Amino acid sequence: MLEVKGLTIAEAARRTGVSVHTLRYYERAGLVVTVGRTATGRRRYQQIDLDWITICTRLRATGMPIRTIRRYAELVAAGRGNEKERLALLESHRAEVATQLDELRQNLAAIDHKIDVYRDRVDAGDTDGLWEPGAG
Image 1 (tube, one colour):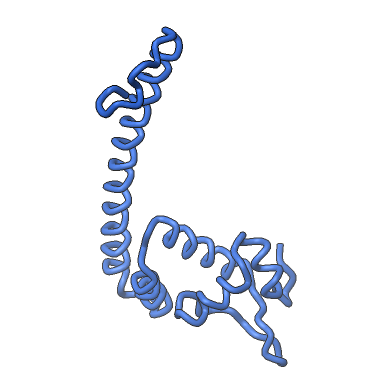
Image 2: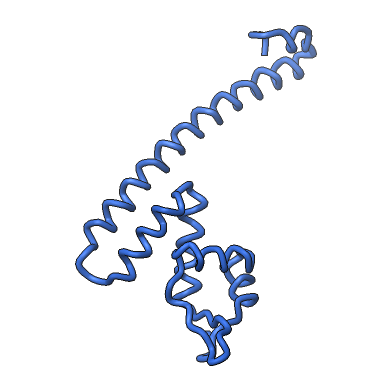
């Protein structure tokens, strides 16, 4: 459990696996809005901040644009009453990610096919023509 004083930005970066630069960027971009500060203005991250950063990082890693993550953050920060809009935003992104996964699966199947062709030809000792278009 985190101490009441919270974590420094460097400690938060280590815990979340993102750089200090990324944490500062997320804050400037309006993605992270709850980070507290000490009397001297230093950031102090609590567990809720780390959890939020993890969500932002995962959304970003799946291709969600910064502007969309910012909109989601704004909705969350606004509190109750906009849950349907949050849900619609997440469902729309999920559909995009599912489409990307389908495309990746198709691409992986094509790569697997090429591997099978090469493996079969190498195992048979017949690699002639593999460099030719359509051969492998």
